[in-house]
Length: 380
Ligand code: NAD
Image (cartoon, rainbow, N blue to C red; front, side, top):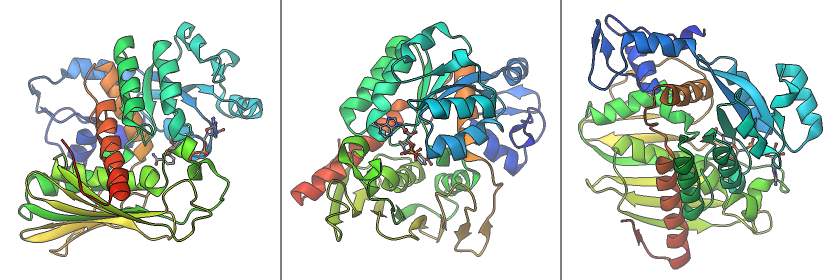
């Protein structure tokens, strides 16, 4: 077991344990007492023994460099199978991770997952506009689904994913790794506990300079959009989990300085959100320049934030009182997958559910609508 994920279930929790346990959705087992609705220590001990078999669907960069290595560090998950359209990758992964032939599938044979009890969860890591197709196949084969972000490229396709998993009686979650990351959890705590008073204004942005002009991220049919869908979504997520509210209106503006490279998708967008309690957020995203990777929440008596905020490691936090937001560096993907396994094993709701993924897509679509109409868009 990875010590980073070892849980203490009795006695006083350290701040680090509190953060880790919050990230796992385990908040209330202290000094032998069990909070209402929480699993008993015996149930928790039983959960620690179990692992769920994950099959990775799509063996591109993220699966290869982040998810497969992260699976080796999880407490309740194991890499049990793969789904790939490339036979050469299947051979390589089979040898590297000792995956039995019977647990190797392609996109056309996914329905056969139904006969494979080794695999409990399909982690969909294909281009954005294929998430629904692969989620539906996995759910219909009786598997739980973890889909990468953005959940899909339209509200309708997100709803299809939710419905298919509901119909199959399986869980659906979205790969929002930051929601399990201790620096982000600490910022959520600072906002919710009003440590600097009420948050009034949030600035958030994420962007990078994209390379290869032929990649799927620049094709509307596969990506559904550009920087906004790919990385702007992190800034949007941050405004929602810092406020704990849903925005009531959005207005946005786009610029395209390279209309050849960005013929099909957005290049740079700034947008503003208004929340029901009066908080305003100003967000930005781009595929044109490196260095935008941050958020700051400005409150009545000070400010706090992260920069870099959304990287896989090296996240740094600062507060206006000079204290650093120091927190344990964890493998965010391992924490995210262990949390999903915990939700499945204890039949509890995921905080990064399909419904949560759909909320973001609805707002991103409103950003595009505001750009198109030049008007603010009201969100119900
Ligand atoms: P990638 O291009 O490296 O990999 C995509 C994989 O999908 C490849 O193995 C490719 O062969 C496969 N694929 C199947 N059908 C395809 C088709 N018709 N066209 C193109 N490829 C096809 O991409 P990636 O960076 O691994 O991203 C995959 C998903 O993960 C995306 O949804 C992306 O947004 C998400 N992602 C999330 C994070 C995160 O931090 N959570 C980071 C990177 C990517």
